[in-house]
Image (cartoon, rainbow, N blue to C red; front, side, top):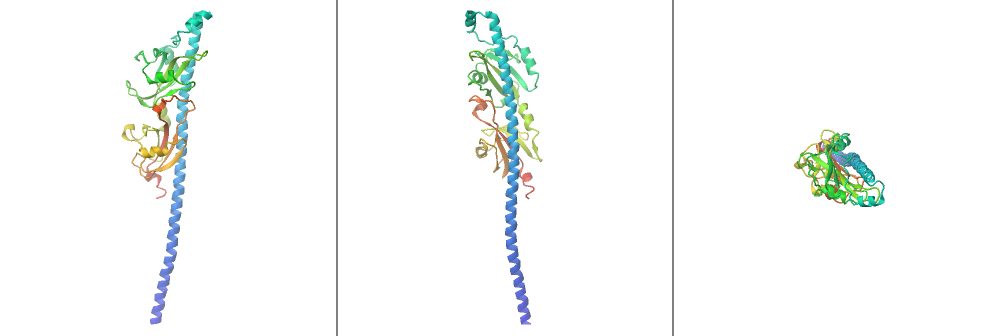
Amino acid sequence: MRAARRTGGLQRKLFVALLIVGIVPGMVALWATYRSSTASLKQAIGEGFQEIARSTSIRLAGAVDEEIDRAGRLAVSVANQQAKHRSSQTGGNPTAAARSHIDRRPVTNPVTAGYLEEWASDSRHYLRITIADQQGLVVASTDPGLPPQQADQTWWREAIHAPAGAAYVSNVALDPVTKDAIFHVAVPIVEKLGGTMTGAVDLVIRRNLLTQLILPIQIGNTGHAMLLDTQGTPLICPVLPPTAHLIPADLMNRLALDHPLWLVADDDAHGGRDAIVGASPVRFSHPLTPSSLEGTRWYAFVRQAPEETYAPIY
């Protein structure tokens, strides 16, 4: 009986030993598989968010570039009308042309408020269009209540002193009169002959031009895109008001690079911890004046609630 008991005890010990030997490597293998799968899934999700941010930034830049082109075409139209007006006044007389060269104020015919209204009717996102001369005096505007002197306005100063080929684009802010969220696009009016700046064109554009490019971006139930500046200010967020949250400084320092990227954020400013986010700088094809965007940059930013992002992992 003692031999039988010893045999049974040995069998149990052998069984336990084999069980331990099998479980430990199995647990290690399972943990390694989990870690590897988690890392692969995180990378796949992150690269997806990065690509969404990149494509969003391209669309945002394209929309602003198109407005710069439109402002430039309007400025050329004004410059051409100036040249025709002066030519008709001088009758081709070189001496008279030299005297008229002193007066370079944009002429009001046919660039009148009515003409600008017609020009702006192609789009609903313009709040105001203004043409001012080289002294900052308003020559024509779609806003009859606009103060006649605009030389103290940033858009005029930036446009009139803009380097060749550059444009001024302001950051998004509230218009003090209408309380609409807007941004400015301003370019100089340059004479074809001589390259002298004779005034500036200002387009005041409602933020909805950019918002309509961001709102349709939805990732699951909680994922969305945003537009940020370098200070971490949400210029456009479909979920929270801009004043309700600010991107943490450490997160902005990590994502404010010159190329698209994804990362895991300790705090995504929406209550998400260890959230996967994607970001991409908005690169304009036109050169901007130094004070454009208040000296900052714009970034497309994509995030999703971590509990939804990590659902497949859990």
